Length: 117
Image (cartoon, rainbow, N blue to C red; front, side):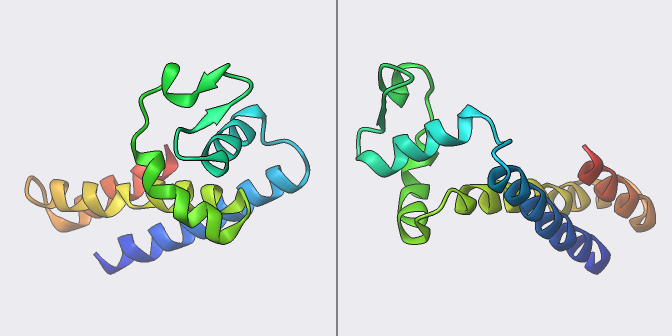
């Protein structure tokens, strides 16, 4: 399990760094700006590109939980880091599921493979 946690931490750091580079070199696309604009502007998550509330097009109540983090960080990099951490947490969960069905070594490989995707 320790190997899976270490690999997940490395994955989160690398993806955060890659996402930061994309953002800082203006290659992150429009979606990041739409989410940041929506979340910083108010409780109804309004934004101009979508012509009203973000919820007109998407049901994303989890965004309300992320608003304090984004407002505290005052940077879209907080969303990039949060996304990388969320993706990294898939591997330990898969390991715990796989460990019940196969030997521990194979379960580690299955969990580490999820980080590739």
